[in-house]
Image (cartoon, one colour):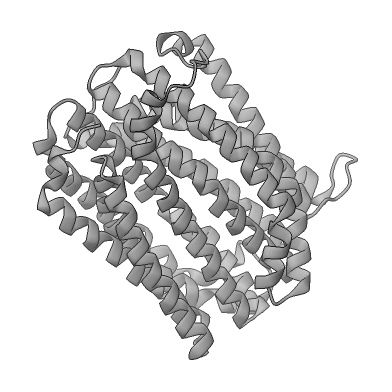
Length: 444
């Protein structure tokens, strides 16, 4: 299998397929928003609440899969290919259990939970319609995450371009058909958006199974052998993955609470924030791809016994991330009205989105700084330290947002500025620990 190296070529070779895959995936989310934006302010706001709430729950699975990726990367670096299937299968068992529990949570607890938080009954009703359909997507969505972790961990990331393209194309076509009601089908609105994504995840899982079988990856790495669950296998996996799972969950749950705070300002502020979120996530893609590659390369380097190269690697990735980010934020600075116009035809929403998009320009630079350093720290296996840094940063983030919006009645752009503070704290905390060198003696 390919070996991860501390070179710009190796960094880019592993990163660019992830970036292209994420582009397809986030383009899907952006088009979702653009379609729903045609249905009105309430639907657009509800898709923000329902989408971010669901995403925060999905992050339990996504975080666990990132922890799985780190451990697979370590075993790949150690050239212990026979153990990769054991890690994968045990991760799958755990993800299936999480999917079942989250389905129950959305069915029995989420409606009352959301009603307690939301001020607008119309947004609450629409959000529940979305979640009622979306709760069936956990299982196959998590299986897709498991395959992403596997192929990224063994540094075969080019497949992710194909898989996420399959997902995005399927989702976009079904969005058009199901949201608006084409080809004789009824117009389902926000429910159609949820159903389209569920089907797209199922199709992508089928693609992964077919591809892995055809390329003998199922047999080579002994995937889906359905090994008997073994605590000795779970111990290192849970040690690395559980802190990442909660770190990802807390980060996105904080974003959900952040949107709850924005909803207290007004429905217009919430809808404008959803537009901003969709484009913000698109511009995050290069850094997200580089950060995922950082996780994998750092873990592989340590597995190869090359821990002295880790800081040099992170420095190189950080330079690439900041350079790309400085280039792409020019869109937010100079074309905010045109960008908002892609998502809505409402002049008031366009106007409300312009200052938010400009604030995210600075947030994206802080994101590049914070995310690369944080991913480098996670890649060393010190995920509990990473979780503690995340908790401190999130606590300050949420307190700042609440005080600004509720106590001082600050405008949405001012509240959005806390994104800059959050990612800066995340990066500084990670940098301090990496420079301490304590991670060098950590064994998995």
